Image 1 (tube, rainbow, N blue to C red):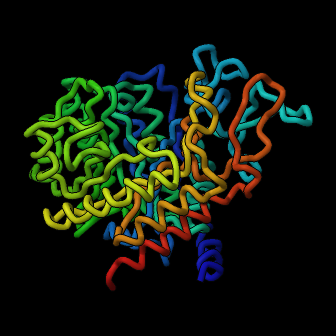
Image 2: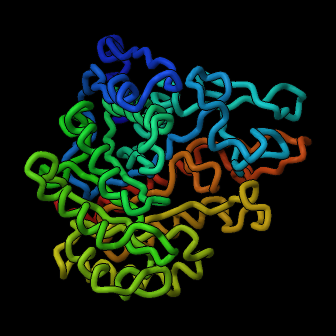
Length: 433
């Protein structure tokens, strides 16, 4: 089946690649309204036949997609972004712990790093359409349904960040249609204050009115409703927006006459159900859980071994699912391959949560499939600065530069793409036909 689909995509490429070029301009010379006018655009692209059904979350495994990497020389004006430390991107100033396998990228950019053979090490920019196309082609090839595209509210509330993430969104829409995948918006609320609700509303209105996002054939829907995730609801880490704000925003996305009608996922702390550990405990949190359509607890860093997952995490998830069924909610657990942010936080060891050559992630898929989970949020597709990436990364990163990198322990660079595809097949068995 995959061979037939790949052939069909190749036959259709001359058609679907028409009318996708956009002259983005220089955001530094524009004001906020000009950035909006230039970047909230609807790409002209046809959806490939044989694509993933955009309606329905059950049976789908989708990845979080950061899209926040920019490169010096990519022409978009942000320089090095999310690669760089406080003094730029160099062996003594960096944030990434994994180095991407760059062998298939069309557009690459020189770095200050050297490969073991003395050649200049290169990397990609998330802003290039060719990058989006490559990433979505991998999703198609390995059976991953699509992505929850991260939309960082702190970023899209100012013109430089808005410019960046609108371009990434535009390119993702093109690639999702060309390669038959689906996308949905995840609003990451981190860092927001009392103006969070208005910031999200303003952005969503632009996405509906100007970008016509919810009418895109690649946009994920559930029961016919556009899917939106609000990530960061109820964490007890001192956030400046309130859980009441999150309830207000959830209800607006669900009920507003023009911009509502949405199916709202909330990304919550691991301790959400009992409102303990990393969760606030309040009547507002209870209301947030009652109001949401789908509950997705954040698991990254909450356990660090297969034994922990089996001994106490898995029983908790079974109870989480039972609660969601009782209250008419969909339950979407989060899985992750490992964790490493040594270059961002020198006090943290490299490979703080070990991947165990894929065994750690495989155990999570088997565990979630065993109790009946019907969908999965995979953290993350491209997160190389916290070491949760599942896309292709190299086992031969730059060496001898003073920086250290994690790798895939000698496993092929597509190991985790394969694991996620295999995990999807397990999860799909829990969906009644």
